[in-house]
Structure formats: structure tokens, C-alpha cells
Length: 390
Image 1: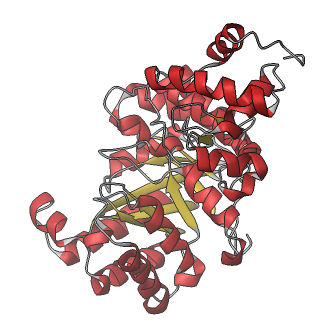
Image 2: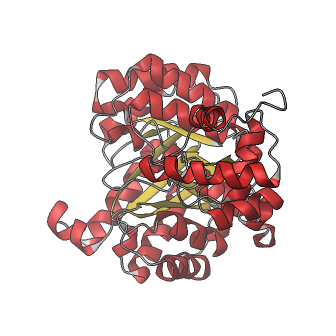
């Protein structure tokens, strides 16, 4: 693998599906898994096999159909979890077991009533047992974001010795600031023996709206895998959004980082996941929201009509959106009205546009958005003929 390639680990079917009300059946999971494989994700976390018979079946069936991506199953640092995951993954071309344990003081004290040394021992045992089934073993240090860096480095070094191939450094509670999370990854790169022989992974949550920023800070500082979901769905406030990190790296080539994601499939994939899960995508969601390439301010509309790059850093076709949208509202100007009128069949002179614009503002003050049928009504009222074919 290229040193500059960032692997995309998609956990839509595991962490994303944990959202209340977003439960998927096996057939829905298979359809999404095939799309993720087509999209170009490197790893599909298909589920938590021991959690239910349905999840076991889903992981097992996904493992059979995925052609390119690694298929991953989540476990706790529990022998039966790992054994069940291995069984679920037995048909995968590239199986991975994802096992781990909480490492923060809070988790050790309150969740496990244990000690640092015992937690390391459990982690080592889990990695070694997983390694007896598959070559590719990822270890997660849950709540690494709030784990002391020196202890975290000890954990990572022990897991590398035990056979882990990937080290997941989760900001489980979404607590870290980007500079803190980036510094944590940098510390591990500089202080863990054998770290260059494994992949460091970022798994960031969005409780403070920093999941994407933290993941990018992580890869800038040496991580080479990002764990994310379509539309940023996931526990509580969600996970890192796949479409966001992919397009950030694509739009900032000086970072010298890239993925194998086919960005032209992002928008359709977003719609597929949203429809399957019944999970509404907020209109102002970056990259895939309904308003991501929509303009209603007159100043912005005028600029975009003259040259798209004045107000858009991404060509919408790059992510599978047909074109930018010029939305007519009371904030729209003459340029936007003339543009939309031409789209529906009216080539207006300057004098006609002045008259039409006055009538348009009357409509716009009464409605949130002036639609194509409203334009036709305005033109009919003012006896403006159709001049071009719509």
C-alpha cells in the first residue's frame, strides 16, 4: 500500500446501524454492502456477530458477497465473541477481526473495576486469540481520546507484539480538539516501538462536531485509516462522515493523501443509506445535503452564474450531483431570475426583466421558494411569451 493512501473503513452497517430506529434487515445490509464495495471502501465493518443471531447471519452473508473490500466483525475482548466472529467471517476473502477494550481511567475504574496491567493482559489475550483465526487483527483502545498518552503507548506496543496489524485510536466520546487528537497520533508514531509496521486508525465521534476535523488531524499526523459512516450516522451525534473526509483530501492535494473512493457515487450512496435507514439527511449537510450546492442569496447566485468557482470549491458532478441549484427566494436578484426563466423557456430583455422582477418579488414575499410553475404564472400574468424550448 502507498504510504500516502488512507484506507477507508466503513462502519455504516455496525456503528451506523446502532442508531435507534435505523435497524436494517439482512437483505438491506447486503444491498448497502455491495454498494460500499463498489464505492471503493477498503474495509466494511459488517456488524457485531455475537450480539444477535440476525447480526451473525448478516455478517456471514456479507462475507460471501463482498468481492474487493476486507470484511470485518467487531468483538469485545472476550473469547466467545472472537470465536463467533471468526465463524461469521469464514467465507470472507479478506477477513478481519476487530477486538479491543477500554483504556481510559474512567473505563478501567468504573466499567471494568480493574487495573491498567490487567486491561493490557486482556487485550493481549484477545489479540492472540483472534490471530489464531485470521491474520488481520485490529485492536481498538476504547476511549483512547481520554486515555493518558504514555499508558496508551504501552498498550499499543503490547498489542503490536501480540500480533495486531491495525491499531484503532478512538475518540469514543468526541471529546478531543483536533490539535489534541493529532498530537496523540504523533506521540504514538514517535514513542511506540514497531508502530511503523502497523496501521494507525482514527475512529472519531461527533459529540462536539469535531469528528471530521479530528480524523483529518489524525491522518496529517501519521494515521492511515479513517473509520467513518455514510452521512456521518452513528451513536449519539454520529461518526466521522465518509463523504467529508474523502472530499477534504481530494480538495487539498498538498496534503499528499488519497483514497480509492469513487467520489461520483457519493450522492447516490447517501440517498441509498438515508432511504434504507429512514434517517433524514439535514439539508445543510456537507457534500450530500440538499442545500450543499444550492444558492439563494442574490450575491452568491450572481457569482455562481458568472463562474461556479466564485462560491463553490467542489464541482457538484464530482460527487454525483447533476448541477448546482439556483433557488429563487426574496433574497434572489435579477441575474438568478433571468437564469431560471431561461431554463424554463423565457429569454427576457432588460425591460421585460425589470417588469418580471417586480412581479417576482410579490410572489417571493409570500412564499419561501418561487418554483418553476410560479415563473410560468408570472409570465402569463405579464403576457411574456415563451421564446425558447424548455
